[in-house]
Amino acid sequence: MHPSPPPDPSPATPSPPPHESARRAAGPGSPPGGYRALFRSPEFTPLFVAASLQGAAVTVAGLALSTLVFAATGSPLLSALSMFGPSLVQLAGAATLLSAADRLPPRAAATGLALAAAAGTAVLAVPGLPGWAGLAAVLFLGLVASVAGAVRYGLLSEILPPGGYLLGRSVFNMSAGTVQIAGFAAGAAMVAVLSPRGTLLAGAALHLAGACAARLGLTRRAPRAGGRPSVAETWRVNRTLWSSPPRRYVYLALWLPNGLVVGAEALFVPYAPDRAGVLLALAAAGMLAGDALAGRFLPPAWRGPLSRYLYLLLAAPYLVFALHPPLPLAAAAAAVASIGFGTTLLLQERLVALTPAGMQGQALGLHASGMLAMQGAAAAVAGTIAQHTSPATAITAMAVLSLAVTLALAPGLRGGPGRGDGTAPM
Image 1 (cartoon, rainbow, N blue to C red):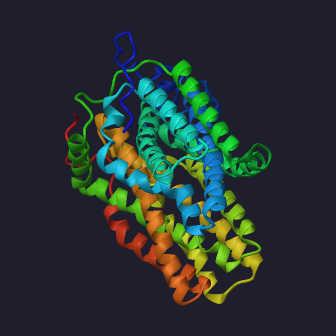
Image 2: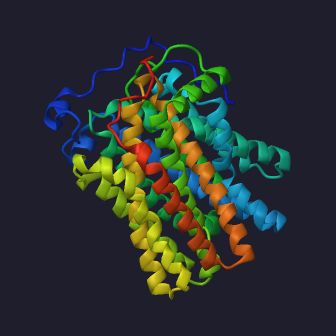
Image 3: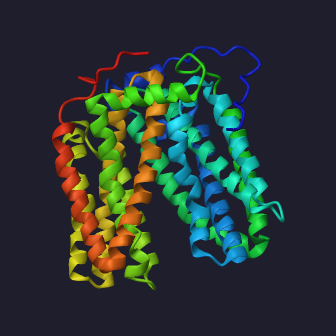
């Protein structure tokens, strides 16, 4: 791992209390006064800007690297691995490095990790880079990303007033989807104009800009937990997080039903080779609508019941693929189904409520890494089924599996958060 960034020169001050004016305006357990109130929170905007810049960096650099690898090797497999390899490596980071998310000063950690990502991306642009060095850089970037996400979302849960996490995370999710769509379009243009290596350097510059946004805009805060980050500490906290039945059900619900549906989405290209972009675009639009619905408009009283069953909406529309539907019907099913991804926000809010403050960064990082790993595994399963049957049959099978898992997990998600988690505050 890249050496931990040094602490700020002056002693860290204790984390400031939540913004009391926002707390009074929101009331206990209710969201603050909408999107404008979020961006009036002093640290939300710089954290949002830093995350958006880094998301853009990952998108354009991933496309550039994939293009570079395919041009050099002619291998679709190596090209795909170069783009998605860092995401798969995040699971290794979750098992070894996540304790750093709560045990390093957040501002220093966010800045240092963005600088590390910039350095790793710039290395990939070096002409004549040996294959082993390129692979090492890709693995390094995946490990950095696993900790960076945990730091980011742990800090988000800390800087927002009570009830604000759901709305704040919905804004981050919507931004990530928008940045990814725009980033792929811009990345393609940059590859054509600047070359793949020039685009990689542009990605490194975006990471540097994200580091500046974090360093200049965030407040110095003490770590949420004491002690030194280590592999042993990561394992200890992961075991603690997993040992609580309420949290365990939340993790399984965050990883499995939506991962299986992402496996179905991975088959859009073989299902409609010439129109897959339409299916992917409408699925993205549905996901953005679901995030807005869950984050802004859903009454708190509805969140518990819907967090158990909204995943049914995520999978059920895909059953129409058993009939090999024409493109308009398939696209409508993808758009409606993706509204169900809003459940992920509701479950993240539940996870935050079930987790002591000293573990929240690692808890959210474990969620993200496990989710990415499950999506990759589900895509492999879906591809295997399609190889022996058809893409439509495989999409239907993944939807049936998702529905079955959702119904099996629903009883374990009943009850209010904060009871029976079996964890004492750190």
